[in-house]
Length: 142
Image 1 (cartoon, rainbow, N blue to C red):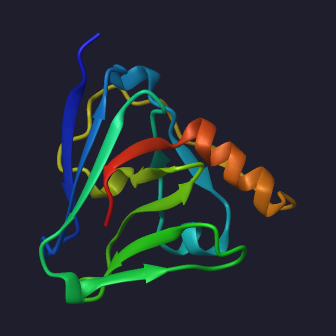
Image 2 (cartoon, helix red, strand yellow):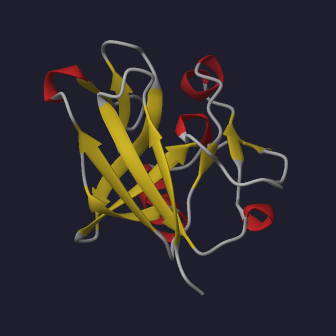
Image 3 (cartoon, rainbow, N blue to C red):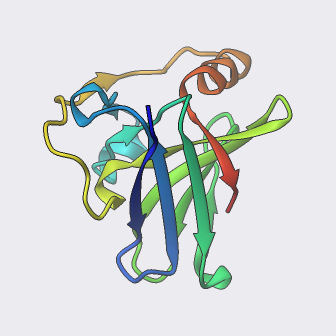
């Protein structure tokens, strides 16, 4: 199946992304993490381990990398407009990322409802292993 590209960005356009997946909208995994950060940003995350993800930073001085908790991933925010676009981590010789669904310009129709997720209690190793299995390979990192 051919990969479909979905473009996204922060509100002001300083951070842009391209998410590629062969999954039709009704098969996307939409997750609503219940951590404070994700709830405050109203984030809905999606990823496809068989897809691809690129982050392009048009104005590098506006990229805010935020690490919290276990310091296992960089959550990417714009310093100008405040939008959280996604996250990335490096592990096992590669980079992996997720997309905040709200940052996509035109998500597909027919998306399933978000599933509330709690990752509390995971060790750093368990978290890294889960992300390597579930997150999207990042081709162009931020």
